Amino acid sequence: MDTWATSSLTPQLAGGWERDNELFDLVFPYDLRPQGQDIIRTWLFSTVLRSDLELDALPWRHTGISGWILDPERKKMSKSKGNVVTPADILDKHGTDAVRYWAASSRLGADAAFDPQNPTQVKIGRRLAIKVLNAAKFVLSFPVPEGARITHALDASMLATLDDVVREATKAFDAYDHARALEVTEAFFWTFCDDYLELVKERAYDRTDAGQPSAALALRLALSTLLRLLAPVLAFAAEESWSWFEEGSVHSAPWPEPQGYLDAVDAAGDRTVLTTVSEALIGIRRAKTEAKVSQKTAVTTLTIAAPAAATEALRAAEGDLRAVGRIDEIVYAEGETVAVSDIVLAPVEEA
Image 1 (cartoon, rainbow, N blue to C red):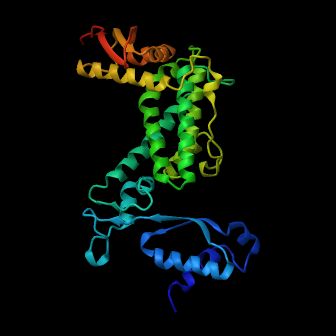
Image 2: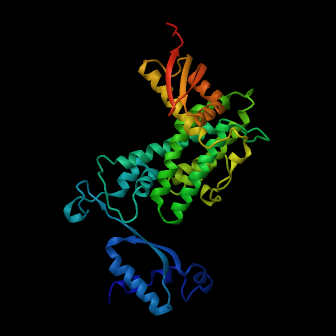
């Protein structure tokens, strides 16, 4: 008998066909059949044909066709060639989340070369998982005061940008484009860590600052959303971080939705505030690096040239920018792009 005779019934057998009618009516036809490209004419064809003959229906609505994992020379792995990589070794060395990240980074239908001696994407995944844990610990060090609201333009801008990420990631997941969902979420996460956390931390630490509750709440809201967005990929890091401040599992938590916090802030609230202030921060960091001084070195004065709209955004978050850059005075000037110049560093006290 053809070996695919039984395999062609996998949707029916898994769904309780002729054994559990209630379950079968609930799950059949399935949303998705994930499978490799090498068995389209065998498993896929035989399953569709069998379902059509038995039930006069397609067994699923979508098919996700994965590519092959190739060796470093982009040749198919096989035991006879001796180029097979044992997954257990990679898992033991780098961790489950790192391997999940590597797998999720590959787009459907695309082959991916894998070098066990230098698994770059796996290493990036491990770094991301560790960063998620560290970022969660940092964010959770700021308790959210009772009655806290989003009142600061920078916080609203960050959350508005995150709303856009939620929309795009959700759209990608709905289209089974897990690689795109991961890409947009990861890009925002690094902006959140490298720019927003640095910009807001002085205000978040200062309990006497009127904007502190807004910062603490924004940090907590962003963490909650990011963990749910990353959970399908970084399953264990997200679950561990979630357990530090929420009940239950992140994997059974509601999927995030856009919250529209930008609407609650006055005219100073603009979704471009975060990106504009981040540009200025990059310029300040570069100037200090070129001067070969610490990023903690105080700045007496500097000039930021920018278009009028960008200047308004910078003014809305000037307090945070001055705090992170240790800046006494910012002079604004007209310019086509955001550019930092005429930076005067405070004298460095010799030890």
